[in-house]
Image (tube, rainbow, N blue to C red; front, side, top):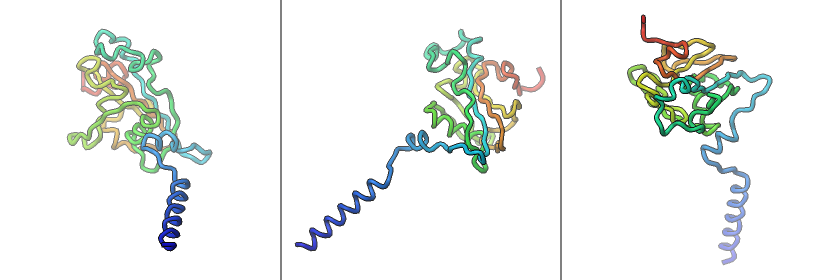
Length: 180
């Protein structure tokens, strides 16, 4: 009997020690509290998410999205946000970490046609939310690549901009539809 009591006390003690020394948190909490700290030695990238073109096409925007929480007056869903670049990070990787950290809704799918992730919607703005030619595009250092965001590997100092187009890229300087 005494042996059982001693074993039970030891087990309870170990459980308390483990529980107190281990921080248990959700995935969301992890991304909020463990975004990499930038140090002088860190390689970094800057990411932003903008939807300015919606204002020029307000009449085409889905009525359910005509609110500040979806289309901020500044046009910036995420203003220039500097983050640590991890080895092998792609445009998609940094976007995914940034939206999780800032609790911004994002939906994407893998596209077998392009062999890459396709971003369908950010902050509840989806392709076709503002007309049949609307959707998300990205550029790196001012250039719109001609391949998917999960294929573009970033380097130190890159500036990634996600922009919402309402005219197949013409309104953001990234039209890729061929000759006009």
